[in-house]
Image 1 (spheres, rainbow, N blue to C red):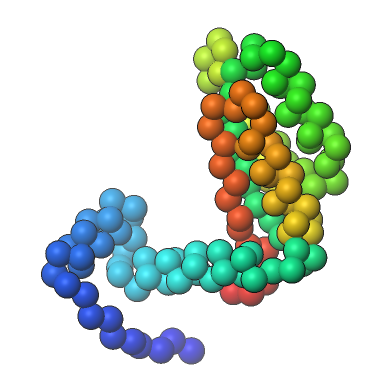
Image 2 (cartoon, helix red, strand yellow):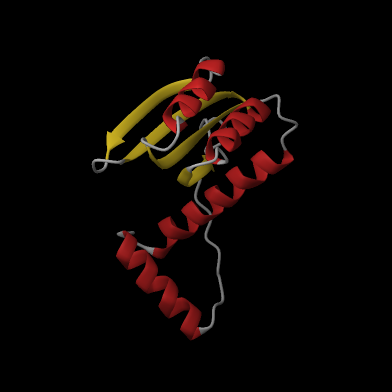
Length: 138
């Protein structure tokens, strides 16, 4: 069932929102608002979790593979947590820099611990852990 609601916004804020959703390719405001709500609910479910529920997340890393055994350190962390790594993508960006994208799955606290461990490894130029949803709550 679909329920209609009303939202009051200042003209300037609405204008900025309309430009944003047009740039992202949303067909209408409702879809954009639904996505914002879903994102907020996923973030809340992670923050309220006791860490034992099954969770999924994506980790993005950019690093210089020539940087003092950094690639080995990152591979070591992944091997220590091999059950959590569902998929890994490695891309050579240029002669020195690599991009790795990992999909992690497991108990929330294990996923967060591994993801944060990878992102915080000395030498990582960019790292981001993005909590996701298994889709069961939506």
